[in-house]
Length: 171
Image 1 (tube, rainbow, N blue to C red):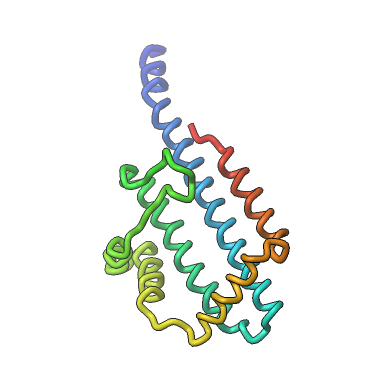
Image 2 (tube, rainbow, N blue to C red):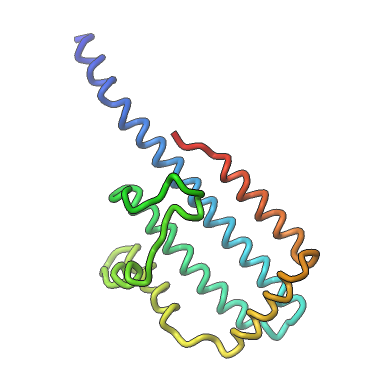
């Protein structure tokens, strides 16, 4: 009986390690998504502070970023559980998942799944006509980014968060 218990516990060790690693990788990627969304929220907030007339386009832009990143979050977890070969886990976290336009389109055609719904939102965003003030918002972003003092606090917060995420080792 002791031998059977030993064999069973030994057989389970790799799956426990795998589950732990998978959970760690998922959490690490989710932290990257959250940091990225927070960065875009801060950037839009700063642009709208300088130019309040950009509020509507800023919200439109954020909605698109949310759709993009939430798709990546869902797709990453799906690939992590189902097809890890599609992920580049040896690269920095921001490069772990690379969805092409064809990937997003194919995923968007899957009916009835959360991943399919997230892909449809992101795909529709990519296919839709840009907001009429899109260029003005992008110009405001460029102006902010060319003066690092204007974005110092949120940029430092983002860089610190990304450095902390990079330090996480999943085994």
